[in-house]
Image (cartoon, rainbow, N blue to C red; front, side, top):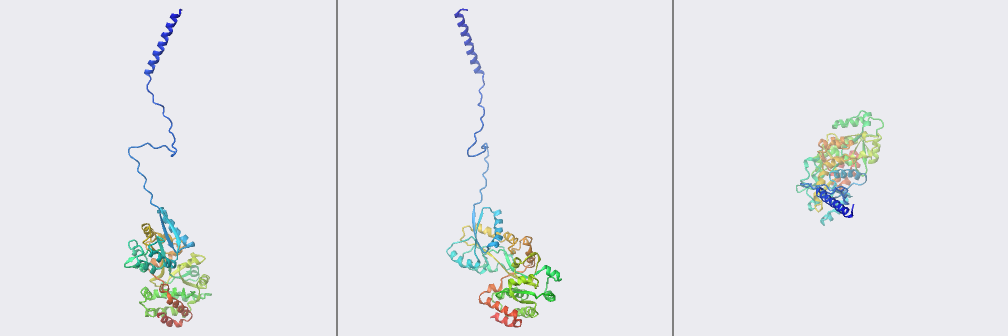
Length: 437
């Protein structure tokens, strides 16, 4: 084959290849690049969700944090019982933080007035047992009016009387302590076949039966110190057998101590029991607790705190002064200075403290009872449920402590005269006239 023919064949082949390549390119469909794996965000470990036509609602804003500053009387174990209350409130109010400082009522009455006069609130919520102090601060215009917060009919009768001024309520009540009546050992009563008296005659019969028990020094232990707690049992006699109105009259000086109704209590009730040896000799009151527990005495008139002084609270029984319509006791009142920067939060907290907060506090071993009548009695610390059901739970009027309320020189005179009466009962009339002033 000559060279010219060979070159011609090669040219034709090249031409055919070029045409075929061009035709193949025109028939090839346009391809989309293969999807690549998403690149992970530096700020978020998850892929951003696709946008939708309807935007996702924003989450509800969290309640603003607030700090409530508290001045209260409790420290040590007592504070731990109160802290249970604070912890319970925070379960439903996690935005609330508490700052607690121990301040006794005496200290508060000395330092708070100056700060309030300067329109400064050192605390948002303040506890004090002094009703007179509450009304004094209210008169000076320093407190938040709680009339719309506290429904008086929901509380133990009489508990708000000392914190009213100008027809308004200036403090909320908290749990109460009581000087409710006589304590006894259940085992002692069971062994000797004794039962709780409901009337005066049954009470006298109980004392007579106890005097027959071998080894008993006297039916009733007489706790003493400076004349207290002889004063407590005396007050209980006056409340039961002269009545709460007479008792209150002595306090506000509208009834003299030698009023015929008071005289009758000493002549017909207290004197005969002292003369017959139903009361033991005055003994330092904590020592008397131990003597009573050992069985040297049958019953002992004392406050609810006695439950924290015995070995076995389940062996302790209680009954009030027979036929009584009132009981002495007190509470820690709660006030809110109107200069607080957190008045709204403080009011909400105090409203809860005065209601559900009382249920929580009375369920602890603080030894306190609810003053809120709607409180569930089943939540009360078991050893105190019987006390509650027989006193304020039964409609008894809560009354202030006589000598603590009057105070001053008369209180000291009261104590001294009762110590005289206990060792020389025949001088009962002289005692009554001396206290009448």
